[in-house]
Figure 1 (cartoon, helix red, strand yellow):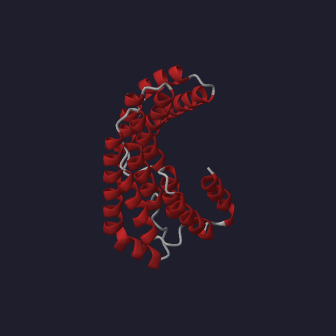
Figure 2 (cartoon, one colour):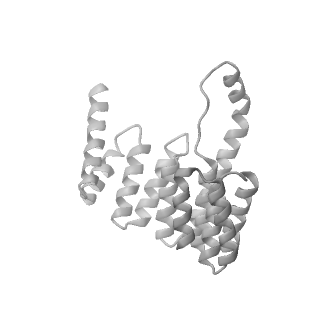
Figure 3 (cartoon, one colour):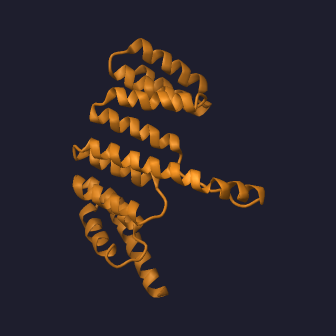
Length: 213
């Protein structure tokens, strides 16, 4: 068992090295073989999704990312973002929106069902439960709506973000960017002002970049 585990980890490491060298087809071939034999498949499927995206095999990429999601009990934001990007690249933004909404519902259900456990763990000095940032998920949803051409739905997502997290700059920044892209420079400028006000010092330059585009 130990030998097999070491062999599988070495094979996965070799695939990563091939990716770093730009040998995407060789990495893809190796990972295709690897996911058939290893018990823990989520990370290998994630790598395969990245590789197939680089090979412009967007359907293969999205399939691999879906397999990564289904192979894990948790939701990895990098996998969700990769799946979204591959679906959008495959001209399937509606499916990207559907996937994000499904993941968002699952995250909400998880937070609700484990809240008593979280409170008990905190009271007992236990380790806190950690999950992906729901704001990141909503920002991804807004982008997917925008890529789909559903601008009003994207703006609604950002409005809800601003309402629920009024001191987080990201909702203002995302709304400002989409308003500016759609010819509403005045409204966008107001959003950028708010974003810069709430942004941490390290992020203020990012706000300026979007405002000056």
